[in-house]
Length: 465
Image (cartoon, rainbow, N blue to C red):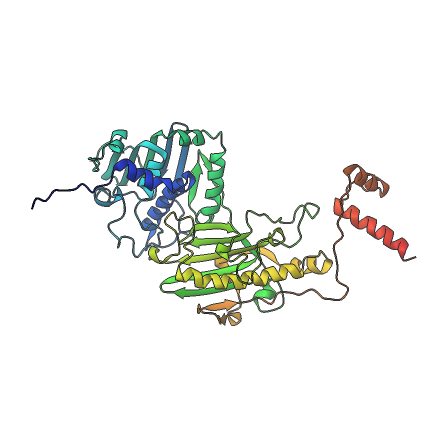
């Protein structure tokens, strides 16, 4: 009986299209930035931490234009052996690589997927020492040739001075070229994403530039009153910490800004922002979910109310750290949480408990009053999530009664008195009429809320006569 060989190798165009279809352009670029950070982690692994932060001295620079994309770093580079045998393969064959280093890369597709997503011609230049480096070029014709999968690695023409990597993409796809021209606001959106998703790493010393402009980090500081952290009835965040199967976990939720701030309040006071409210989830220093307000993080789930603007002062941070990236509850794009993860489902129960405590607290203090202001006054937005555990009185940690064992700190939040409760009065009038009232009281500097209060006091005084 004759045996005929049947071709089963993938068509390259189909493979590339499928690889890039399910990732957004912004996420593809962030994948490359993840690789820079992973390189820095490999470089500093086992070395003493810098006084300025573990990532101090490391940088990544991104350039976007309508005819090219470039990302370059000084994060250690890729050695020739790794480049020749692993780095350019479509998927990671060395599952044990980085098993003892807290990176987030697992599948070995991020660099290739990002390059293919953006354009048809790419070049990777890397240097690991004065004597070792390489250049790999991916021309357009390689993309169109199903029979040629191998690439050529050259060891001359290494035109970068630092121990690092430069990836450049040219012959951009049409849609990518338009977005990089910045007519669509893509560059600003990318900058905002880097500020949020890499805020914790940047704060630890890592430097990121986009088109020559440094990116500033966005971080959440929790309001804490020292009396609350010591077990007294005062404002402090809810906190939980544990280790589950080699993964260190911490959960923090609370207020990041006082309740009740609006446009008429003290302009110097911190203002709530919908961009900071909600849950932020961090895996090995990388933010994988930012300011989420959906059922994915417990909002509107079980006995927790759905997100509402009245909860805009509430934020939570969950931190997962592990040297085995496969144990982290992160999706393949590294921009989402694996909702079916056993670990994440158990942690989500803790998240809901903490969230419910602060939605209840917010509901109890809905109405503005001097009592509410006093409850806020003793707390300052001074602690990051990773620092809260150091400031909680050791005697206040309790064993978590839930399925996920660990240490729990549940603050004794202040409660409003029920005697003669304060209620809000709101109404709208034309600006011209409001200004007439200000002139009547001979105080043009009054805020709109002060005008309302003055009018009420004026009428109340006459009503009591």
